[in-house]
Amino acid sequence: MSTTRGFLAEFREFAVKGNMIDLAVGVIIGAAFGKIIDSLVRDVVMPIISFILGGQVDFTNLFWVLKEPENYTGPRTYDAMVEAGGNLLAWGNFITILINFILLALVVFLMVKAVNRARTSFERDKAVAEPAPEVTPDDILLLREIRDLLKR
Image (cartoon, rainbow, N blue to C red; front, side):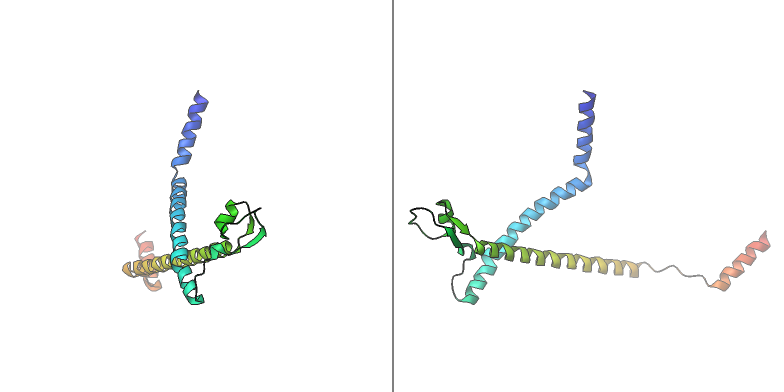
């Protein structure tokens, strides 16, 4: 019984540590941020790419059929063919995910850069706000030392 109580106390201490909570918050924020980037790519970037290329470009439906589903007569879309049992090389979906990754890396880079700039600015302002301690000249230090020796 005491072993179980010790185990539970140890687990509670582990779970409540600041690092564990920070990690959990980071994972939750990261998952939400991933959805934002996915929407940015799907709803903003891809329509711009479609406009530039002059047509409706949907990278998710770009694939190569490695093995046709038997007796398949349905639409030749990725979802329909996979559901019918086809073997597809979905290179368009890979391109979409790669664009997601590049945008995510770019946004994280810009955020880290902004945080570093803000931190540097804050440290610079703090250094200006706190005047540096005055340096006592050597001759004054020597005179104080002589005074202290004479007092003894």
